[in-house]
Image (cartoon, rainbow over all chains, first blue to last red; front, side, top):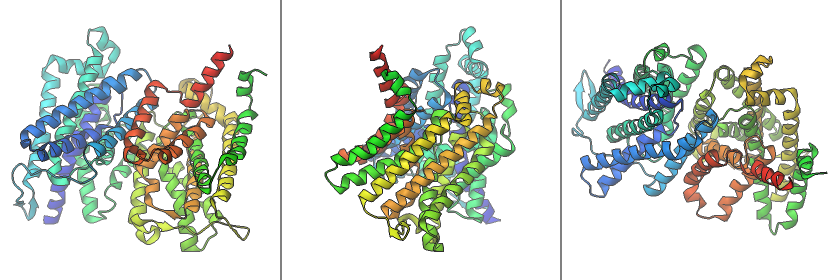
Length: 290
Length: 316
């Protein structure tokens, strides 16, 4: 039982990160129909920039803030410099632009930073807390609470603000949104920036637990995508549920089956979802809501 | 004959490629050049296959190096573990790759859009994980030695011999691809690429044609992987890695999506570049990413079709 609880906690923690990556996918996908393969790189950039700012002597909160701003800027630049000029291109072309951006950011990170693994000091100390026989790192709670806050803020934003309504309108029907005066280009800009910011926060939160390195983004993107598909592409609720589920399934299979094949879980789930239920768990919801 | 008619003549590309294979060694000062030449043709073979998928079926595979890996490890594991002849393992590897492509592609290609890219990305990573973890079979991260290819009791070795073998195989694969594009399947694919709805209205089984071409492109990559392993004599899981897949995609994009001849140009540039630029290795990822992005944004046609368009413009 303690073992199960232990796996469940670690599954929930990484699952929260997958949920944030999936949420980033969903935001961009809803606003522009683009699958952003560079989503994982936002997470990497958030973690790596914070690490190297901290190494340079910048106080940790300031380092995290700088990382957040830098990553958001890169997200905006990705849209303005790479996606915008290719507006109207076929989906294959857009996929390849984002995958090119992903590899480019990895390559630049490898040059600007380095190829080693890095960690950050945890926010609430490193002593594990005992819960029902399972020992849980305090940072796990930071990750879960942080992810929860982001989800709630995003929900409030979409439900309660005019800009949020414009995002919903753009997701529902781009042409109609433009007709009623929504600057859809701005909305896509905005969704890239917010996606990048969410990714950066995920990267900063998870680095004390899983470490960070220049090439962590590809696997994260795959798992975030698996989460988004399991939940139903385009559904924010699905992204969150899907992320937590993928994290749990992965932790359980790592614990009970084989830890060296835990990365294969995401791929298997993608295949199973595609064969059995391409619409995902909450796929229908996207028709009515963001 | 006008230049345009020449360019459109079906035999011309074949003659051109055969001429390149034969004439190039006249300028080779050392065996090292034969080695690079052989590598270009081996990669070009895989790129032709991927180009069929990307340029004609309008689908992208981000895990094509996974098939390269299956082909490579087939000719390594088969002879070492089962004592099977290498040439037989090459065919078995190709059939295995085709079967895997069928299993992965069939459920996915019925759906629209981005799914093949995501699924193949996962597939490529999975192959690399298996190759790294199953050390008892594959030697793990350190890789394994590949027994040399024996043909009719004769051991194939030496860069020059491999140059001719790889060159001849490439010409074969090249002609096959050209013919394929003129076949009903090829014409159906081009119709799908132009308008999937129109193709469907015409009665083309879109999903089935896409699966067919995905299987064929996987087999191309597998054969190229087998050649690579036999040629190098040593193979590591890196061959199947994510970066390998991106390299193949970059080669297709560079030469020109949908240009079979462009495949050779794309492969040549990205095989030769690291040899010329010693700093290339350090900046490899950044450069590959940049190439894919810049070509997709500004030069979507790729090198060869762009040059052809310019030449045609001059003639008019």
